[in-house]
View 1 (spheres, one colour):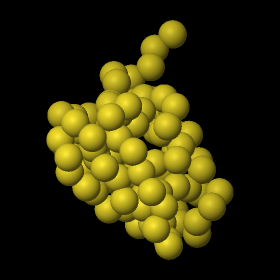
View 2 (tube, rainbow, N blue to C red):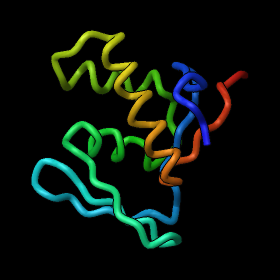
View 3 (cartoon, rainbow, N blue to C red):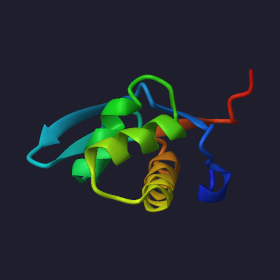
View 4 (cartoon, rainbow, N blue to C red):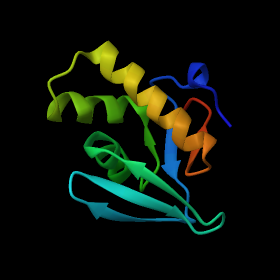
Length: 101
């Protein structure tokens, strides 16, 4: 799994195909169908989850959060890295090396 320190603005993340989710009020419940485990998300986590249904770069996640919530860029980036690391540790997302083209 990817440690938080390995997640940068150019890192690409995508939701695991084995995960299904259900929106619940201001958040969501994720179910990893492989492991049979649940994972809860708050409103911001749900917003990020909706974005990673297709592979996307972390900088796009940060931009989306900045557009939607009143938060400073560095704080958004640090919080997003923390959420992504937790999701990766649970096997709910895949994290790819930095994009280089």
